[in-house]
Amino acid sequence: MFNLADLFERFSFEKNNKRFRIYNFLILIVALSLYFLNNHFLHEINWFFMFYFNDFLAIVVLLSFLNIVYPFKLTNLWLIILVTVLASFVWEYVALFIKPGSRFDFIDIIFYFGSMVIYLILLYFIEGKINTSI
Image (cartoon, rainbow, N blue to C red; front, side):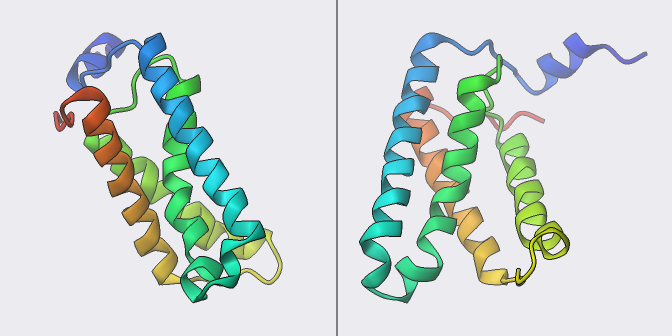
């Protein structure tokens, strides 16, 4: 029989606390500030800022936002990878059918995973560990 408590225990879900939310809020503010800075100034520097810098921030923004609003800490490596894969699928494949003029770009997916690594590094500094339990 399926037991939700066993699932939470398996993935080592911890209740989200105020300190963790504040850190994620700060990460979100910095990432969104960089996003707006890029849209107004940095995109003129070179092709990286024009085409890929926002993709490099995307997963950091998504995961920090989820960790602010979700009642449990989203710190499990495998769940973070799953969120990144699902976001990549939606942003690069599903968008083709929803948004006219959208194009699939494999390099975007590489930058999404780079963004995930940046978030995992930040998470390590916040939590002191990376949760890899399966």
